[in-house]
Image (cartoon, rainbow, N blue to C red; front, side, top):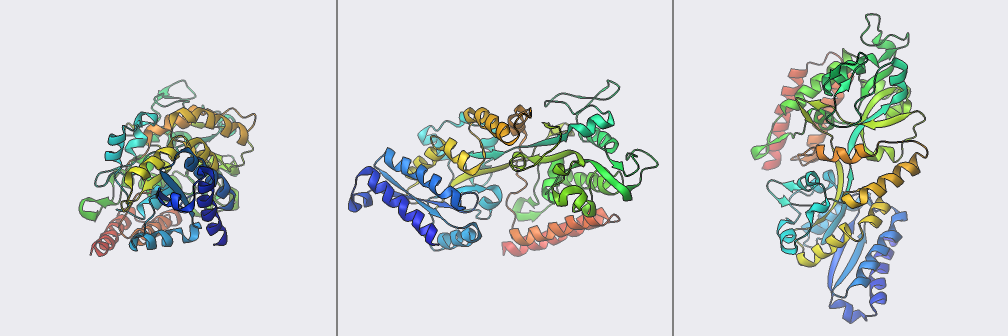
Length: 456
């Protein structure tokens, strides 16, 4: 806590020193509080760089005093909830992801009128990412800042070993099989080649009658660290929340879950629960184990992955003609309770504009601002994987296929709902004989009860 208070005090005093004002003069400025802690920015190495961003803003003008409040992530949710309920909400909160944002549903200001009033240039971002922050009932409750598109990480060595052609190198192109035949790059095609890339200890692949699923050593497809919602989004966006806060099971998610259940327990091209947590698959870090031919994950994975084989990134396949590449993203929010919306938007514009490159460097996220993406990705991949040629265009191309509604978005009684659907998902991954239809019916019934209780 001393460190937090020290940063806050240092930021405030630095602003006074740079502008050359006395304390009474500074009090005449409009004070805008920036709350950090729900996402990145609450670890000590980021303190000084964030302070520098604040100092630079405060030195650039004499109407607003930006004050930084850093709260440890373990305490940030409770602290912010207390501030909001006590009528002491900060003006700006961030960076924050979708899950953190929606933990405070209803707390955020609709930025649409301010965007229109200031003629803020939304063309600096992909239109899909602007739409990503539009809520049907709350308006434009965020603007793009840091994004983490998803795509297929592909182990090229396993494809070469099996004599199987690689996936298409760009969206909209067909898959060309070993006989030169064009196939749509969809979930059916992915399954067909994934089975050929799933191998047992005797070298038999999952299409062979000799294949032994109890002795698997390699899998064709996976999606590490995903839950029922993120796995369901392979077949398109969805939400458990229907109109009136009623529960629903999206048809495309049910189709995806049946496809995944088949892949884990019958067709044997996806790691099931026991295999997925085993040392063979890196205790959960599947792709780095070298035992997964195609793994769906986000850009952030490349930030820490240790990959000692030939690999590259490829497009997500389609389902019923539609491609979805689920998105993780961070933004800054203006609270609905701010007493100074115009000044808060001025600060927000600064954070997303002039300070964007510095903040993306501090937090490690890919800039949502299109003009900054090329330089960021070039440095990112060359630093993390020197000498490895990566199709970085795949990252930016995947932005257009972001899931909306997002798989991390709001649900009534968020934690209880998460626990319930996680129990369902654990059962699917652990029990080969699970009755899907019966369990899904029970899941919906339980979610109905949870949602109804949360609405009282």
